[in-house]
Image (cartoon, rainbow, N blue to C red):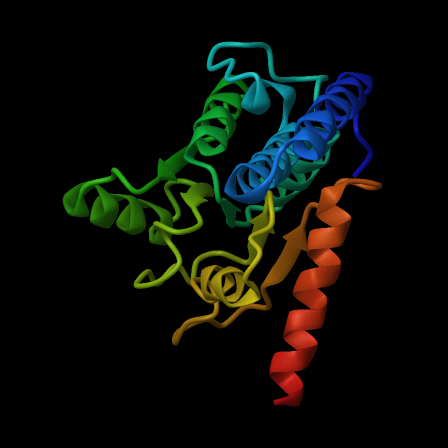
Length: 210
C-alpha cells in the first residue's frame, strides 16, 4: 500500500520531531518516547484521521490503505462474500464502521466494550448472512468466536505477536468451515509496517522450527 501525500507529510514530521526528543532523553523516558513514536507511525499508516483523532473528519482520499480496503470490500460484497476486518485500535474500528455506513455497506463493529448480549446478537447476524462486513477489535475478538460465514479476513493493521493475529484469523477457520478463506494483510510500503511484517515472519519461522 502506498501512502498519500498527507500521510507522508505527517509521517516525516513525526519522525523528525520525535527523534530529536528521543536523542535528548534517557532511561525510561527514552523508552516511552520510542513506544510513542511507533504507535503514532502505525496510526498515520492507518489513516491521518486516526492519528489526528478526527472522529468526524473526512475519510476518503486521505489514506492509501483505506483505498485498498475499499477495493477489497467492494469486490467481496459484490461476490456475495463475507469478511472479518481486524484492527488493534478501537478508534480505527469506529472510523472504519463510519466509513462503511457512509458507503451504504452493511457492517457492525465489535470491541472491548461490547456487552455479551450484543456480542451474541452480532455473531448471529453475521452467521445468518444479514451483515457481510464484521469489523472487530483484535484483542476483543481474538478468541471464543465462531465466524465460519467469513470467506475473507482483512488485517487492517498488524500486531507485534503473530500468535494474536493467528488467533484472530482462526475465527473463520473453525469446525464447520467449508470454504477456502483468503487472508489479506495491509502493509504500508516504506514504513514501520514493513519492519513489523519482517519481525512477524521471523517469529513465525522460529516458532515453526521449534
